[in-house]
Length: 312
Image 1 (cartoon, rainbow, N blue to C red):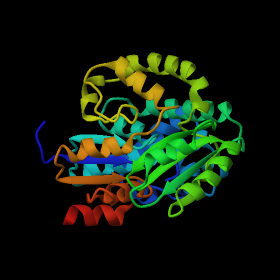
Image 2: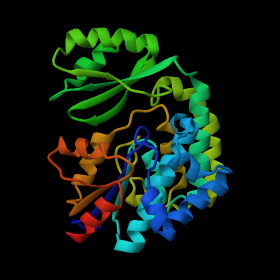
Image 3: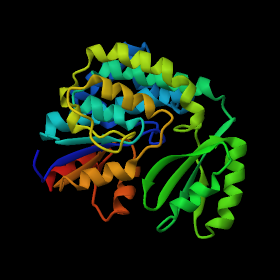
Image 4: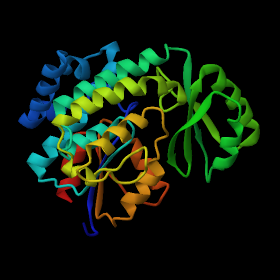
């Protein structure tokens, strides 16, 4: 593939909100088909979950398929109505599944079942309240200093989001301890507790990887891995090999407890000299991460932003 690529990136958990993709659902048959397919696959009314006040939207087993549904509904509409074609796909954490669906690697219904099971397993691994996550934000963060602060504590680097943000994940007590250390070690950094129900991308998630690998392996017989070479892996930071289901299974399995190497993903995207990068999802957190690399992103969160993006 040459340069001047069109890129689609998809945000992950935390980008959910009530009403997401409603305007696409109301006006586009492609979006309605996505909601119906996921509803059928999970026996859950995804329109009620996504459009109406529903506490389940913030329970990870439901959050994950809800975000996937909204993102693919938006993407499917953009492709059908505005002629969007994409050369490179990437997603942040859960968003990697949306990227694989959008690229045509994993069928939508399969992905919906997988992320629902992924969320259930994650919440079973660590009960609510026993884990925590902490965002560390500041100019030119000293990552070695952050890693040194974790020494001996049950806390891991979960997300390398940008040169200006790292997210830590571990036990609640461990996060309490490292927060105190970092206030002294990085006095200029902003420390923010994340509103999450489990310590994602930490060693505490490792016990669920074996069973989830088996689930992925069984599901992979129904995938179309030839297009995987267009999709970036959070776990390795680089592109998946084309037509290698085992590599996909391994990357998605190890992503559960491994760090999201989003800086490496962004660097790989920039290396393709992209003409346009679209962030497709209910919110636009990835745009800020790219901004830290002085890279512009067009965020599409609703009909208004879609029309603006494609009328330019």
